[in-house]
Image 1 (cartoon, rainbow, N blue to C red):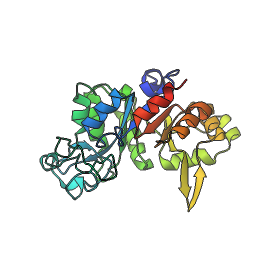
Image 2 (spheres, one colour):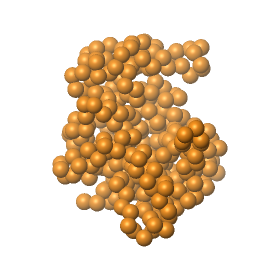
Image 3 (cartoon, rainbow, N blue to C red):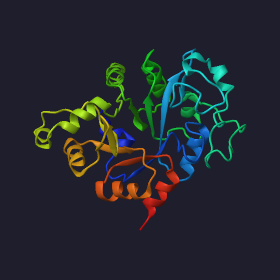
Image 4 (spheres, rainbow, N blue to C red):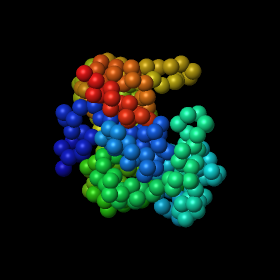
Length: 281
């Protein structure tokens, strides 16, 4: 079956999607069940998170390869067993006011497993974007196992900065008969960015994924290059690609992306703010 007919993120007419980056990292401790649940309460319609695996092979939701920045611990996630990881406080370093207060210390926030996210009664079946961060050893099959077990394939996008990782996802997904939807890896976006519009319109280029997930600007050799432009959006439209932008926390930028660029989704650390912008008359 064509994933364009079934996947939540590829539907037409859904308007601008409010996507909670890391579950809304400005509002609650990032990539935690607490953050994901809160994001849905304040306006997010989809979640975004990142994946690594523990020493004993359990896929967990964390942006960083280490626990240093978000917990009181230190070290690589791949060196922790799940039991050891469970003992860390994922709310320990979250502060909404520059270090004056730490309101979620000792409140039970943990680095969740992907199984817990997919099984949570509030989050179950929530449209989700997952970026596979860990490359070695590969966790692709483990992630696909969980997607199949929880019937999430039509509510999910898989992404990675690494083209090799997404190629593995696409191959393994096809082998399993799964309609996995992926974004384009960074190298794949560069190819599209540099290809002239008229060449794309001839139909010779076939995009390797179904969505573009890009920043507004990208720094290249010390120079800031504007990625999202009318030309870029025209290229996406001629190819039938949805466009989602990360990570936008400024209301003026949100309005520009929604009203002028007419992007399909915005990933933000503050889904409550984005919801206010969307609802503006």
